[in-house]
Image 1 (cartoon, rainbow, N blue to C red):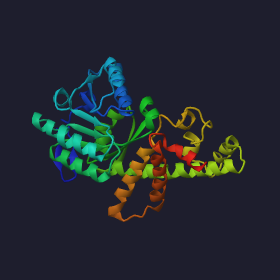
Image 2: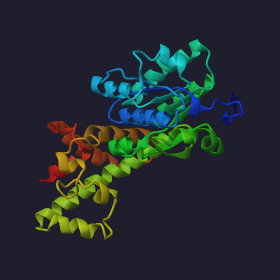
Image 3: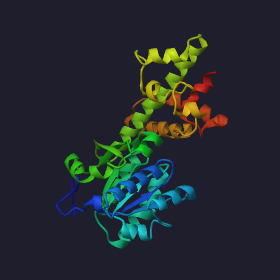
Image 4: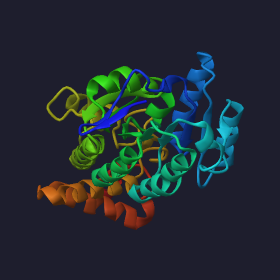
Length: 325
């Protein structure tokens, strides 16, 4: 097993092979269901014998039935067979409150009751970096390896196994790459970012940029339309000019410009506006101890709030394009 030092958790030759250990996946929603499925497919294809247990506080019976048919073990609780049989736990839950609850009232006490050490705990939720650090300290004190590993890539990335994981952990980069990084391969690519909470810090800053970028694109395309510009031609020009960005190339908020993006299916099935509001709030919260001013973030969040207040918060955040009609 690993040992503790002032630097954090140091892996040793006797560290468990996490690629051969049972997995407990907690939070089987739009993202988690696809991530769990990709883990199941990988271990079935490679005949590892590794079981994937799944749990959700509010289970979707259709999703759970599909996962069960693929070989998942549906767990009625975290504290039962999941805790007893798993050495790896992945969480994908909505907020900081849920992360604190699931680790401090279920996973960590459950592991304590079994006497297990050196479990691998991976939180893929998007939460306050300070909460990640707090949970990591609790896990480390009990002898477990904790990673904050929020994701980028959306539902499509989760389904195709091409997510990017932004990893913060007390492990060294060398130990992470050699012992832990291969675990993520069925779900996407893991990038080592730094110490505990740094993965979450990267995520909230990335989403800050994305939220502001989307609002700017929506405003610019709406003005172009009002000025009589053909938006198909405008999009071609923008994508070969200085206005080009991920939103204009991959996730345009204008209906009909791109196939298979939320804007072309009535803004359904994308990244909900309410989640963007939450993530921008996390950035603002994280900035307060540093006293880093975030004037654009504050303003853009207030604009997304208008979308939510109009009853459209469950639609993709590109719906802000419709605000400027």
